[in-house]
Length: 105
Image (cartoon, rainbow, N blue to C red; front, side):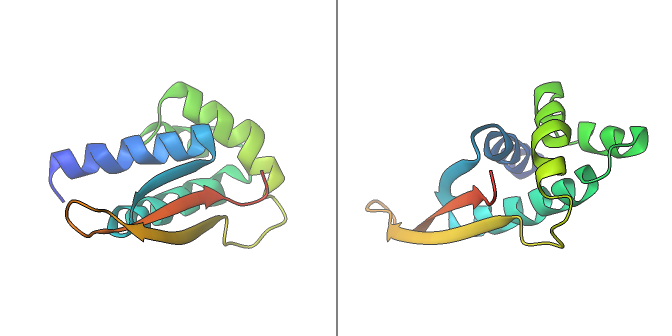
């Protein structure tokens, strides 16, 4: 993955945590889903090392939301924090679009 793709995944992850739902293409959503699932799993328990890990991928506001809102809500859940709903194809290039959302928020 090149730098531009990493920044794109990072920005989409932040927007998903901030807005609880994003519209994007399926391949991007799958990469964002794996990243956000890992971050929410770590946010279930609030420690300094876990906050530092999350700070590598998210801005301060994203880390705050992750550990104050998403972590405690999903503390008893064992996985599957996000849902991927496929929607229409994009008219210009025919790429499959989807909605990626966080469950239980």
